[in-house]
Length: 293
Image 1 (spheres, rainbow, N blue to C red):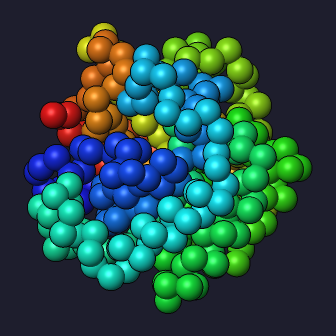
Image 2: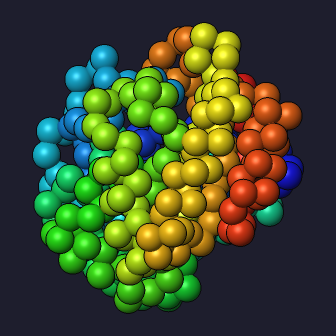
């Protein structure tokens, strides 16, 4: 079972726009169980996946087509300072945040696309660590949120080495067990077996958390056969020596870009989590959906 979540917009609002900042943004995250300070390294909204459940508005032209690296670092520094001092909770967007969630959990490198495509990823990770030390927060995590399509590439592995300077997590996407469903739920013609291999390669060197979003599409969730196949993919990663630290089973909590995509009911999400627990000896956390405002 997932943790109880308070009602309100604060958990539904994951906007990557905050005041005048261009590349850094704060969100109260159900999966982080507190404040996550995001870094958008894909402001151009270009992604190699086209997930129908994605909330990024790609119909509106991007404000920035390129990352201003120095500006990004300055914004993260400013945002961490606001969070560390508590000033952030006075902002109208966060004033209603429950006390239990008023904790800084992480700096999350994500974006409006796939963050491992950013050529200065390693420098961003190193910069985030320096900022945490500057503000006396060495214990908060740096999280990379990735669709796993480039996790086995040497340049990406080299960038990920910077994570070892402090607490870290790598959240790797795996939403499917079969090629057909993978193409449908992630909007790509890439090979699922390659993504699974990429995760296994990375998970032999780093702790990896699997993040799996199960939506409804045209009112229908994934079939039981699909979830069986999905569990098989997870076991492939383990069989290849991969270390899966945690499996996150969740569904939509923010308005998707595709109006045909919806939220999987709690009972169906529980059934998926139960099946994963029965087939793998790994921890599983469930995060229930929310109706978007």
